[in-house]
Image (tube, rainbow, N blue to C red; front, side, top):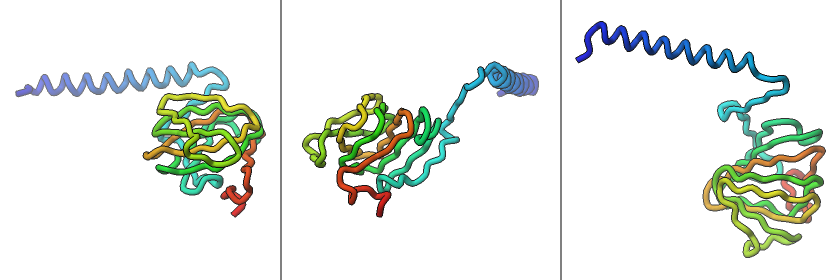
Length: 162
């Protein structure tokens, strides 16, 4: 059983802890250097991806049409991205699920290489490739420099043109 004085002490410690957290947060905000950017999961704005049906894209930093950028793709289980190229090199980091990559101008499921969460690969510019999500929702982060483009080997595979 907690006495009244014990309850007061717990409440006072809780309030003191809240003030310390608030002061640390305020201090951190004041110490941020110019150009510092943070993206918290709760602030990510997902929108339907025009290029891959059923998937979502979020631009975290920059603009894919000019300068450095970071985007994330969220794909449903089994989603396929048909053969295409990019005008710029890209770095892929698998955050969740399983991401698969194959090279060539024709989609070949047998040629896919699997990348589990935590994997990273660098894809040179203009290399024909295809991709797929594994059996669970997959999230991939892509870093590159714009202007960047995605050009499908077969224009009929480009959902943006439908």
